[in-house]
Structure formats: C-alpha cells, structure tokens
Length: 474
Ligand SMILES: Cc1cc2nc3c(=O)[nH]c(=O)nc-3n(C[C@H](O)[C@H](O)[C@H](O)COP(=O)(O)OP(=O)(O)OC[C@H]3O[C@@H](n4cnc5c(N)ncnc54)[C@H](O)[C@@H]3O)c2cc1C
Image (cartoon, rainbow, N blue to C red; front, side, top):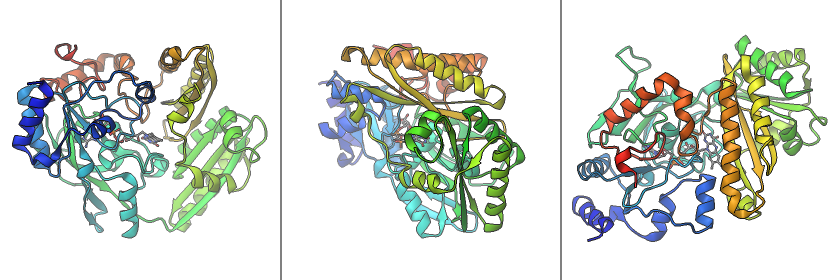
C-alpha cells in the first residue's frame, strides 16, 4: 500500500475520520505558505511534494494523537496556521501530515481584571481583534497581514505589528501557552505577570516555526481601547536625519504607537505631494489617555524639528491608516515577469546608517534589479529595523529564481557585514536558513541541540529554520 494511503488509514482509525482530509484542493492550499518562490513555483506548475493528508483537529487531544502517532512512525508533521508566512516555513514534504489549526479558533475567555485573553491558535488576527474591540479591548498587535494570519502563527514566527513601538512585539504580549510536544505530551504554562522560575519556556516556541511542537492555546495581554489619538507627519531632508530623530525620540523615552520613517523612494511612491523631492517622511501616531498623547506628540515633534524635520500635518497618517493593509499579491508582479519581495532586518543605532546604505548598495549592484527602497517601522531604545522592498526583472523568465536569490544574498551579506540581524519579524523559513549559523555564531549549536532534545527524530517541520536532519534528506 502506498505510504500516504497507509498514513491516512492509520489516522482515520485513531481520529474522527472527518478530520483527515485528502481532497487535492485542501492539500494544495495547506502544503505551502505565501513565500513568493512557492507562489512562483505553483504558477509554473513545478512538481511539488504531496503530503499524505491535512488534519483538521478540533481539540488539543486530537493534536496529541497525531503527534504521538507521527513520532512513533517517524512521519514529518507541518503545522499550518493561515499560510501567510513569507519565508517558506511551510513546505510540506512528501507523505507528511499537515496539521491545519484553522479549525481550532475559539476565543475562550477575556479576563477584564487581569487584562488577559485566552484563544485557540487558528483564529485569524482580525477576528480576534474584532471580538476584543466589541468587549472594549485591543491586543495592540496589528501586522499588515492581520486578516490573513492566525494568532498561533504570530508566536511561531515572532511577529511584529504596526503599533509595536508602544505595545511591543508578540514576545511581549504572550503571557502563557499550551502546546503539544512532538511525542504527544501536552504542556501548559500559567498566566502570571512575571516569574523567576528557571528559563522562560515561552521562548522554546516563540520563533520556532513549528519545529518544537504545536501551540494549541495562547494567553495574550490585552489593553483597554485607547481613549485618545494624536497624529503628525514630518518631512526630513534625508533618511539619515529621520533615523537620528527616531533615535532621539526613543532615547527620550517617548513611545508613540506608530513611528514609520520612509526613505525618499517610498515617500515619493506613497506620499507624493506630502513632501518635497528627496525628502523622507515620518508618520507618528500616539494613543492612550489624552494627557499622555498630547505631550507625547508635542515631544516627538519637538525632537524631529531639532533634527531638521518639517511638520506637514496629519493627512499622510490618515491616508496610511486607510490603506495600510492593502497590498497587491505576488501574483500581480509575477504575471508581469517581475519578482517583488520584502526583507526586514535590524541593527543598533550606531550602525543603522551603514546597514541601510550597505543593503541598498548591495541589492542595487545585482543586474536585473529595478528598484530597492526601505523604511523603518519598529524602533527601540537600542536600535531599529529597516524593511526593504525590491523589484527585479530577469532577462529570461527561467532566471527569475536565480535573480531573486542573488538579491537576497546581497541583502543578507550586507546586513551581516554591517553587524545587523538578518530577520526582524518574518522569521527564517527556508529563504534565510543558510545565513542562520553566521548570525548566531557560537550560539548556533545550542539552537540545534534544543531542537534535537525536543524532537529527537526530527519530525517537526523538517527543513524550516534549521537544515533538515541528514536522515530525512532524500
Ligand atoms: C501581505 C502580508 C503582510 C504581512 N505583514 C506582516 C507584518 O506586518 N508583521 C509580521 O510579523 N508578519 C507579517 N507577514 C508575515 C506573516 O503574516 C506572519 O509571519 C504570520 O505570523 C504568519 O502567521 P500564519 O498563521 O499565517 O502562519 P503560517 O504561515 O501558517 O505558518 C508560519 C510558521 O508558523 C508555524 N505555525 C503556525 N501555526 C502554528 C502553531 N499553532 N503551532 C506551532 N507552529 C505553528 C508553521 O509551521 C510555520 O513554520 C505578512 C505577510 C503577508 C502575506
């Protein structure tokens, strides 16, 4: 009997058979994420590995049953949230089991006193936020993909939202979790504000990209809806002047929810008319109690002015708020023979100018690149990220992947040369895997040991984050 058929039969024996799906359309949707190379290969009808089935669990016990079986039989398991990842973290191998968490999507409780919300992993971010808003709360986490991504996928990829400067990133919001380990055991942590009880076990799952187990419940911190909002847009003579302004705002202790600084190309592309040619535009949004938002916007504008910034009103912020989650899919560009992608990296303030200039220079030196630009969208007291966007057109369609990887190579090498980190919030997946050892240096073997200790047979999402164990390679 073919391996996939045997796996399906076994799983139908130990689960409700309705959870075990082998409909080709369901398999096609759940075997990959939104990595542009996977989208391209799928448009090209390139041969793709076929997972044995998609499991749609409804309980933690279902997930446990699947993982216990998979470990015993040494079958690869790929957790699937909503498939919005952009780094190739979901690419299900032949005869693997995809666990689609989309059927576990209950908002279990909101604790209004402790400011906590407990939710199952498959709920879409926008549905979670809507339910919180109806109760008078917000999570404060607004990835651009909020309507495309799951609350469990956020943890597994270490996501960051557009309001992160005030509310933090996903690691600041996750208070407790339940997860199923590769051997089927279920672990739960308790929601406490802080604990000095050994290592912080949340970090075994934050950014693990499904390699350490499957998250089945998350408890997140929530916030009462903000009473007041203030906005400002400020034009700077250069990206460097804008970055210096961000540094000083963060150093002063202001924490506007939104601090987004666009370089001259992105300013011209998205905010034509709001700034002069060659200027970089900063969008500021501060929210909370009115006494705070007023002084915070004034303090931010004062620092920006001292750095050469020119206050140009609030309309660009309103326009951004309106359009912020509308982006064309990769297919739109691929159909026109172009490849477009984004690369988010970060560094400390003392090397941010070098990183910004070095990555752009490296990408622009690649023959076939059409445009490369960047903005900063997540700032800290110690540094900031730069979110680069590039578009390239190969001479021949067959070279699209080659061009894509040459541009990525240039960006990653320039980031490492400038002392930055290769990933701020999209994760590693497959696209960044080859640079992870250099990023982590002497700490890299520790990551490999942790993974091996938690998943000795390497069944969990093989090929994502770390290279596949030799025994799994075909
Ligand atoms: C248009 C667009 C805009 C985006 N904007 C942002 C942004 O602003 N900020 C940002 O951070 N990201 C952004 N992303 C990237 C993406 O949305 C995030 O990486 C998101 O967190 C992925 O969630 P998902 O549910 O879609 O996960 P998936 O793509 O399904 O999976 C991602 C990884 O998580 C693992 N995983 C998923 N669920 C679980 C689980 N329950 N337990 C264990 N492992 C699991 C998978 O195996 C995989 O390794 C964007 C993507 C797109 C397409």
